[in-house]
Length: 308
Image 1 (cartoon, rainbow, N blue to C red):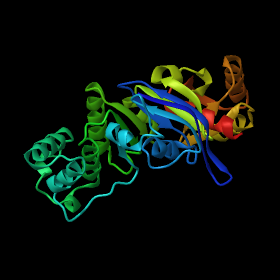
Image 2: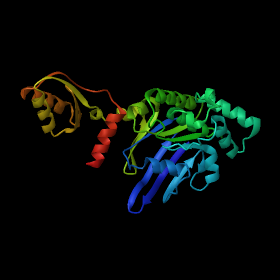
Image 3: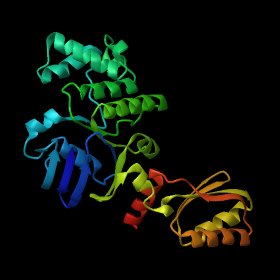
Image 4: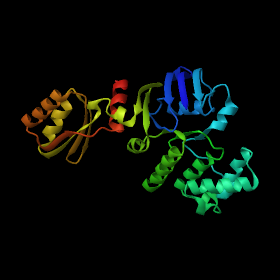
């Protein structure tokens, strides 16, 4: 559905995309992960036809997206990380306005827009003004707007940003249903645990390059030591923390009351040596184990390595 080949983009002397390679197959929900400035939004804007690339190729549903902007717009729906709404319009009027842009008017538009509002759980809000909607409702309204022309690829930049937990659950359910109906979705988010729950595949971008890509299962198992070690301290906490900080394989440490989570890049033998050092140093702990694989842990490890 989406193939990116040697995509390059610079802002002055800053290289935002460095011959980026990316492939997303039909019906995938692909999570695009990376720190601020890694190139996520730049990639999405180029794919949406909102920004020109310096060089490279973007193929969407068989067309060259960089050379066929009109055809591109028929195939994609793009929702940026901020959503523009017109507060003086009712919800149904807002939807019908966007339908008219694609030449859909009259009874056909009314029927289509009501179906789309129903699909994003906003049918009961059709006669309410947009400015009366909650943030989560406005976000879903913008998603419905992106669907009026029946796109094959949805590009969503931080769609859950600022939403409360309930609103994020609703958004995830909607995206899963769209995928089951044949939609391909490219989604960026900084809420990594939730991204891992909804996506079928993911890629980690760093400094304009894709450093890892695959199914969620493949990438979370790509590196065993991406999983943090979590230990629970019982007594002599200062000694335990000191030993952990002094270990050369400790790259990041988080302490919450008596629980320590650390990014530890050593192998199993070095883990055992760390545990021994903690005990010999006077630390008293009740548990010491790697967490299950997670996208968040892998992201932290890779971006640390790239930045070191």
